[in-house]
Length: 87
Image: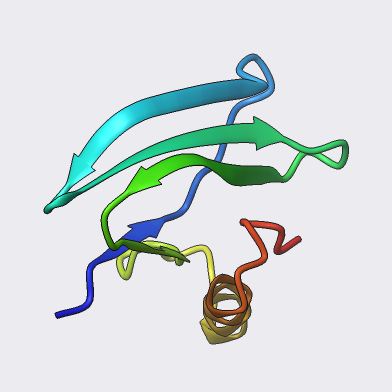
């Protein structure tokens, strides 16, 4: 069975970076660093991972601010392993 974590990070200007360490997701443990890029987009970096877990950058299905084009773009960038670098 696939272990998937959906994320959609958005950091405010006053919080340029935050790290979540040793977060348990099922049988896996992951440490993630979220940061704001130069253009203000929030990106992520996997700092450490134990166990099988796939990250997918995808907005909440209840998000009303994004259309299907943005959702597909985020899913594709997640699938090719861009490290959250979809702009």
